[in-house]
Length: 175
Image 1 (cartoon, rainbow, N blue to C red):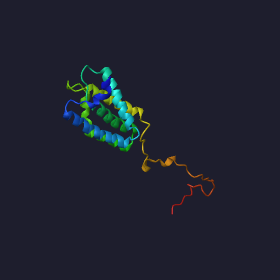
Image 2: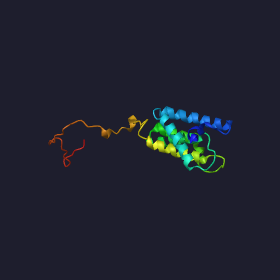
Image 3: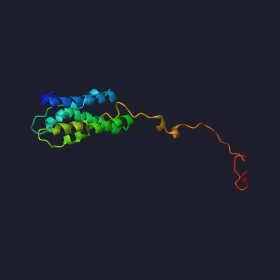
Image 4: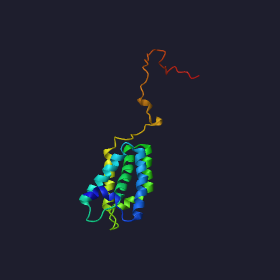
């Protein structure tokens, strides 16, 4: 059970540590910048929930590294931008796909020495967090061109029908 909390600090070698650190730094900066109020709750949820899911459902092996957390943060940034339908957050979703689109292959059991379970459960927890926190944090910004002029109230003007206002089609003379 102690591995649920401390597995993100254990890495197989220096290259593993560096690759996880760089990805964690970049994704966390995006998370903190766009979701400042939610960032710590999202990280804590993904960290603990993915660790518990790995402990419950993964194969008997060593599951080390911060990649489950990285997959979770990338998943949160991607799905949250899509769910919220805000242009800025959707741009972040596209940036995550552009920079980390190759992560999708990590959720499949391709390499026997890589904990694909941690990647998969991190991705699932990131998606769950994006759905759970969809109404908190930055909401969709309504731009001026998105405003509907039909929503505005029209001034209260009375139109009085008179004979002068009617158009006489039979005697219409174009000049």
